[in-house]
Amino acid sequence: MPSLANPTRFLTLVAAVVPWLTALTAILFATGLYLAFFVAPPDYQQGETVRIMFIHVPAAWLAMFGYMLIAVASLGTLIWRHPLADVAAKTAVPIGATFAFITLVTGSLWGKPMWGTYWVWDARLTSMLVLFLLYLGLAALWQAIEEPGRAGRAAAILALVGVINIPIIKFSVDWWNTLHQPASVIRLGGPTIDPSMLIPLAVMAIAFTVLFVVLHLVAMRAEILRRRVHAMQKTQVEHAALAGA
Amino acid sequence: MSASLALLARDLKLAFREGGAIGTALGFYLVVIAIAPLGLGPDLNLLARIAPGLLWVALLLAALLSAGRIFHNDYEDGTLDILTCGPLPLSLVAAIKSLAHWITTGVPLALLAPLLGLLLNLPQQASPFLVLAMLAGTPAVSFIAAIGASLTLGLKRSGLLLALLVLPLYVPVLIFGVATASAAITGPASPWPPFLMLCAFSLASIVLAPLAASAALRIALR
Amino acid sequence: MPDLGPHAGFILAAYGVTFVAIAGLALAIVADDRKQRRLLADLERKGIRRRSAGAAKPARPARKKRS
Image (cartoon, rainbow over all chains, first blue to last red; front, top):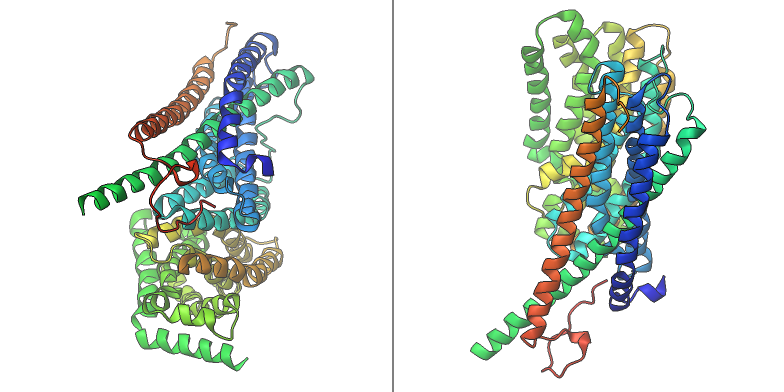
């Protein structure tokens, strides 16, 4: 997106778009929650707890979407040297990690009434746990390197290494899971999703996605401004030093 | 070719001369396996069941402890800068250093494992498969550790950070490595499918990891 | 609110944790955004200029572009 490569133009776009997207988010969530609680019927197997699915599944999608976004942004940093790529990657980490965390917690709370334990090492939850750890690694690396240029490029390499490994990890966890659970097929989504649940699920998924976009745009603006502030503070110190000397 | 061998010989010589690095990794391995039963109880049946997993996890941790030194010494004294200007491409340099780490850390740990398995009542029929799996999997461990080492060059708390970055990437190695040994214990499932997948993962790591490691080295050296 | 059944606590806890997590994240992001805008306004009021904002300034050593 060459037209968005200019940070100042990007900031103008953000300022224009964020209020509308915020309103859209609110409307979507209002609609989605209404559908989730008042329209979707209780599952014949799982009863009312199936309503947790309306958070758990979109959160899982967005945790994965977040990491894919970071991977694409990482390509932008390393290959195309897009000026906003590392800003996009850095700010997506806490958002994606939060969604991974929400996936794990809602999965746990869904599992307890279903199977009696707060944690099951089923393939999907385990894979999500590993994804959460990958997010933590990215956050730790960003935090550990002070110089933002080096941090951006190092985190980009780590993100790309992670994204290549994710399918392999997923495959190995699935394989491991079938090895240890030959009997019942426990799947958190249930064997099929009834169509009456598809629409609330879709609305909630879209609502969460727009929420991700809003939060990400605002966070990107904050990061761009932070870097400007930092540069200007350095100028301020330089001027003061010159004046003092 | 001779430049590659020269670099490998140099790294091996330095590692053996340093001595303590290899010994410390082996010692750490022993300590972890020795105290684990103190936490788990002396029930030999339980220990036998978890022995492959425990031996693998402890091996991963021991290998990670020594991963920092893959590039650290050369980074500190400027040799790494010289190597970037030398006749060998940086990815080959990274590969050779990863290989040196495997020879001096992965292989000794793998060979020590059956002995430590005695402490955990590892069934005898599993021992050869465990060693085979470890010898096949530790290349991946070393080569992926090099990615972590190159990303964290010169950083504070780099040891812990390296482990945090790299351990999730070891999940396939762990799963297939343990499965190879466990299959030999628990009967009808053949150990060869997970073993082959482990080999595939190692081979892929040997080829791809040096690319990531050398890119990270360039970033650290800029 | 329809009857949420015997496991109502878990359902409400799930939605509650989600709400708290998202709210916390959003607050952190918005607070950071506000803080940076305030700092930037302060610095601009003091007359500090960014290089590409193009004000007259004595020559300074070249800085790496943000990329």
